[in-house]
Length: 318
Image 1 (tube, rainbow, N blue to C red):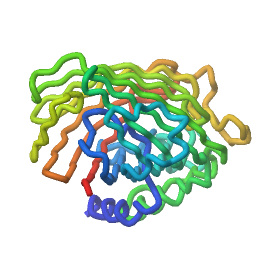
Image 2 (spheres, one colour; image 1 turned 30 degrees about the horizontal axis):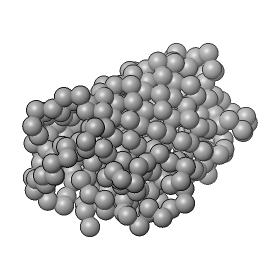
Image 3 (spheres, rainbow, N blue to C red; image 1 turned 90 degrees about the horizontal axis):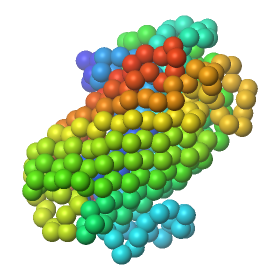
C-alpha cells in the first residue's frame, strides 16, 4: 500500500518536478529524434532515506527544438545523427536524521534544486563516438519546494516527517554547463558492448568531472553502428562504474553567491574523489521504453556514509 501511495504522488506531481540523472548516456538512447520520457529516482527503492533522496525529470526530444537559440553555445555537429532536447529537473537531498529539527554538524544539510536543461546529443556512427552537451538554468533553495515535496510524500506513505528543512541551503542561482563524451571500444554484434564514458560539469551547482565505462549485455540496437537495425524487442542489462572528481557541490557547500545558509559542509571536509556504480535493466517494446536502475555512491564528505537509490524510467516515441 505504501508503494501505491508513493506511485500515486509521483504521477500527480510530474507536471512540476523532475530529477538529476544522466538521461543522455548511450544505453538509454531511444533510437529516435522525437520522444518523451519520465524519469523518477527515490532512495525508497534502496530501502534508505538519506543523501540524494528523490528526483524527477521530464524529458522531451524533438527536431523542433533544433531552432532553440541556446543550441549555439552547445557542442554538436549537424551532419551527425543529432537529438535536440529539453528537460525539467528537480532534486532533493536530506541528512540521515530527517526527524531532527536542529542542525547536526556531522550530517549533510537539507537541499533542493530545480532547473530547466537544454541539451543536444550527436552520434558519429563512422568513428563510433557520441558527444553530449547541456546548459541548465534554475534555482537552489526553498524556492525549489523540497520541503513541501518530501513532507507530502511522507504523509502519504506514513513515514517520519522531515523537521529540518528550515535549515536548508538558501536560495541561489543555478547555472551549469556540461559536456559528455563516449567512445565505443568493443562490441560483439548487438549482444555485448563496452564504451568509455567521461563527463565535465562546470557551474554554480556542480563543478566536477567523471571517468568510467559502460557495459551492456543482452539484445539491443547498437547506437554506434552505421548499419541501422531497429529491433521491435530489446532487453539488456548494463553496468556503469565511475570515478568522480569533485570541485564544488552546492548541495553540500551552499550557493556561490548567497552565503547566508544556516549550515554547510566545510570545504576541507568534502571528499574530492568518489566512486560510483550504476546498474540496471532496460526493456524496449516497439515504441515503449522501460528501465529499472540502482546506484551506489561512496561517501561525499568526511562524516558521510555510503548512499544508495533506485530509479524507474518510462518513455515512448511519438
